Length: 279
Ligand SMILES: NC(=O)c1ccc[n+]([C@@H]2O[C@H](COP(=O)([O-])OP(=O)(O)OC[C@H]3O[C@@H](n4cnc5c(N)ncnc54)[C@H](OP(=O)(O)O)[C@@H]3O)[C@@H](O)[C@H]2O)c1
Figure 1 (cartoon, rainbow, N blue to C red):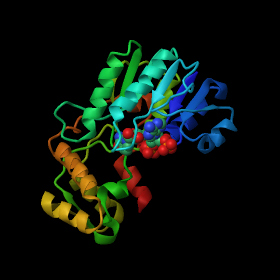
Figure 2: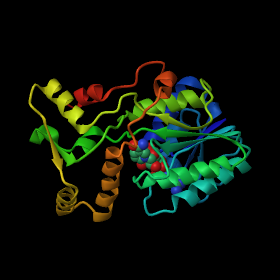
Figure 3: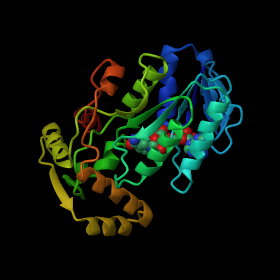
């Protein structure tokens, strides 16, 4: 059985949908905090059990593989929570744990989540079972990444660097292919779109798609933080995001890899494909 955690979230639920196309439903289980939110999977024959990283319960019983979706609570001690989930998966007899790590995870990467993903990968390395860390590319919605450029005609963000912005749906499909056994991959591996682009590239692509001149406007970090906070964004979250820009401009996300396309058996969706859909 393949047990998926976070199956009520965006990536986990889409991964289960793709698994259902590849694996009989009775070979799929989900570990969720609120089973009512996974009733649609139960209705299709998926085993739904209550479990959290704090208290995994018996949700991993019978799992050969566990997909451990990284937690999303910035206030939580995520490394400890992931550690508990890994311990429970090993105790339940899982032979492989697949973990959703982050593209560009490196000890000196200033983007704050990097450290927690590396620490979780280290726990996996000590777990005694086979493991895969999918270092997923940035898959945030493009309107959030770029801001209101369609209204303003400008991509006004801090200085950035190249990033292979990736479609979450592609990552889910590739993750399902991996779990279904299309490929076996050990340790950390990048799962991201093949081409890294900057906001300057986005402006060119958006100009081509719209026939308007979309400008790239570089804001200095302090003005950007002040504008965000004035716009009611929480200060801590704004400083957190600033570490993202710092990491992009230092080149931490510049490199990609072929695995996403290989698992999909096709080219991943490009930022141009995705931008075109929003216009
Ligand atoms: N690569 C990227 O660009 C990127 C972007 C955003 C996030 N991420 C990371 O990737 C993860 C998955 O992304 P997503 O888009 O699917 O996020 P999401 O939609 O927020 O889903 C997160 C899932 O994790 C579950 N979860 C959180 N804390 C948990 C805990 N303590 N015990 C059990 N389950 C817990 C949530 O359960 P509930 O439904 O019960 O809340 C939800 O199902 C995120 O959690 C985050 O770590 C990566």
